[in-house]
Image (tube, rainbow, N blue to C red; front, top):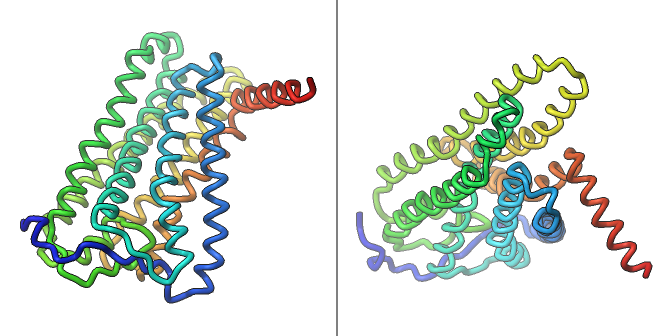
Length: 314
């Protein structure tokens, strides 16, 4: 593995959809609106959960961490992507590309672990309700959150450092909207076979292992719900799980298509669109999913809104 200082490339050019200038202009306004709604929606969830004492429960504190991840995702990707969409070609420095890839992987890996921890929380609450306060106490919650973030940092540091240890001799045009691993790796002028095996194995472990654990948790949850005698209890349990299941399906479905696809399985334009689904739809829809499907969140949001209206009235 050659060292990074043998590279002759000091910046990259992000091509975006430069072959379709009309499409770029239309996408700019779509993604600008997406960015505003994503940041606003997740920021509201963060503020409301932080200020409302009744929501200081593991289920909602996990959601707060998830919203922090989604805001981070958008902040890392969207500003640079809007610049790319507003011009034919956009340059990004070597260091800037490294930083963008690092934080994309960090927030993606952390979200995988957080979704797994949220599934365990629902499993403990529904399948073992009597022991739930002990099973998911503050100490256990903190350990799961810390594990999610630290694991994300460790995996990301190893992968990003390895990618940018390869020499880049030219060309320097990244056929993408941002510095994602696959399109950047295509520009490396060295044998990347070992890294590709490592990256594929790592993706299986980070994406699929939590997904299997989530699946097993929900199979147990389903059986527990079906055994409940009360119809109201069943509806409430299904309601609290539906939001999380929707997020899991959206995130893992689009992430798997992006990172577990065959190298030549899709055209570059199709790969860009799939990456956009993974990077942008999940952060946008998560606050809507959790706010609209969760009765407690709706109650608190309405309470905060009424408080704000009353303050303006006086």
